[in-house]
Length: 147
Image (cartoon, rainbow, N blue to C red; front, top):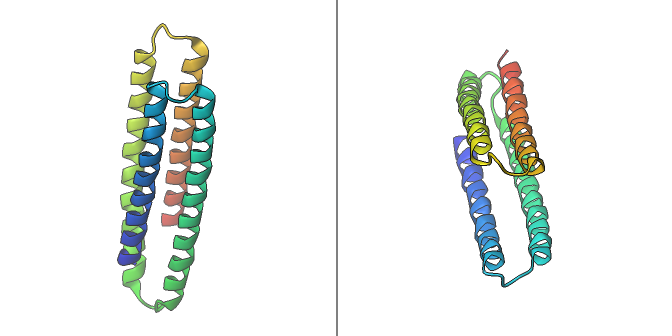
């Protein structure tokens, strides 16, 4: 299972890096006024759609392979259950750190945008709180799985 997780993690980071390599030139072209804001918005929307589709395909294939792997495991094998428990505990610790990071980034974002228009600040707060809410939800699901 560790090998399966490692392969998934490598593919996840590769997809994220490729997405960054696509978005960076698009933002650079906008900064240099080579493309209009409308062209940038269209490109960014296409980028988001492509990244979303890529991550959905990656996650679904990983879940399918993990289910196949679990079906092959011996039900009396306690080491697999112990490994799952340890992985859940590590994930919970990581999620706690991410929640603290998101809270700090919210505070720094609010301090950094002091004096800026209110709608822009509200969008930033909404995005930050949405991501934080998803992290809290994931953490509560992991805690329920441990019980």
